[in-house]
Length: 219
Ligand SMILES: *[C@@H]1O[C@H](CO)[C@@H](O)[C@H](O)[C@H]1NC(C)=O
Ligand SMILES: [Ca+2]
Image (cartoon, rainbow, N blue to C red; front, side):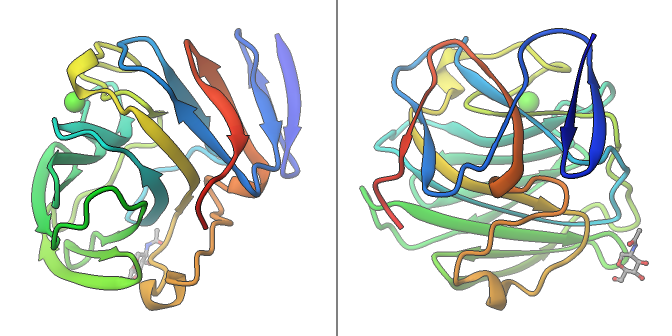
């Protein structure tokens, strides 16, 4: 059993090689379509969530559907899921329910996505490239489960698995961050990525398959 210190917390890791690093200025590249390449992100604390904020930046030239962020629990594969159905159509899931946010098409440009969700109202607020795409409601009163597999690069249809190459992410992703509360998204437009659950500058993760880390190409 390996143990490592992450942000002052002691994590016990049963198997695999978990890295922890300051990813500032770096991006994960998913260079090829596959059902095997992904990065597991290990949160700094495991807790159920009544509120959260997720931000990430990504570049891809995919035109088919793909997953950006997949947080699954043993009972709900789409506990939190950010999924692109087609260019400009973002599906956001909480507890297996979903809402869609539509954006003007801006192909072949990197995107900066931030989305927050608040259980008390069920309101999900979605921002793209520093501009709001509006608010919709889902899963009012729900609590997101704590024991999760958090994966970028693939979409989970079971706890930590059941990937489909045709939903995989091919491209680059960077500055992925997750908070256990609602952060005012207007303030995130500048690109803050020091989440208290997933912190890009102290990222605990495990790479699987063909994933490459390189300096990021875009801001
Ligand atoms: C979630 O946010 C609401 C405000 O919308 C707050 O009252 C509540 O305490 C928060 N829950 C947690 C667990 O932080
Ligand atoms: Ca799924």
